[in-house]
Amino acid sequence: MRIKRLAAGLLLLAVISVAATAFVWSKGGSVPAWYPEAERPAEPARPQSPRDGADALLRRLQRDGSITVDGDDLARLATEGLAESRDGREFLRVSSGLEGRVGEGEIEVGGVFDLSAIDESALSPDARDGLVRLRQTVPFLVTGERYLGVRGAPHVAEGALAFADGATLRVGEVGVPLALIGWLSSDTDGARLQIPELRVTSVRIAGERVTMEAEPRAP
Image (cartoon, rainbow, N blue to C red; front, side, top):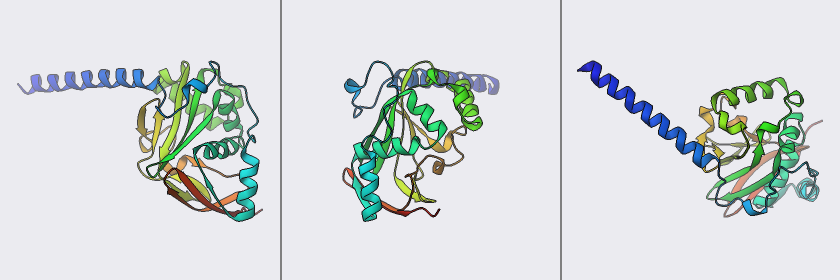
């Protein structure tokens, strides 16, 4: 009887696993309700200037020491931050551009990416290894265009915007806790938004806007 119960339990786990995989496959291919799907091009954008719209925001932050932004501005700053690294530039190249959202005490930044179009030779060794692990563990993510984003409550970590416990990687409409994704980061602080040339000192959300205070980075 014990063997039969064990077999029945394993069968149930298998059914749950298959059902969960099917659910993620179907929902992971869509985009969140707030994402402007109708506005994005059929093919990934090849790249617009990462400084489009971000320069004025950065000048205001440098001048005043604080800035209040909405989701659109947050996406501009995130684009500028990603463009500072070789890995970020390659991910932007295969995206349709980033979108942002602020609300309910959280921020979300994401976009539609075609990871199958990534030039692995343009990535750092760490990012290349992460892409390999991603392809091995969640292969459907690298077979075409998918919405990928990060959502969570922001806080400050080492002068950058980071995500508090409970943050999730958004794959379409599905959320996966960042803390469970070993190939991305050992903790949620691994997903950070670095503001070029500035050190963020505080962040707070009010409604659909987020206020950041910052100071110049030490040379």
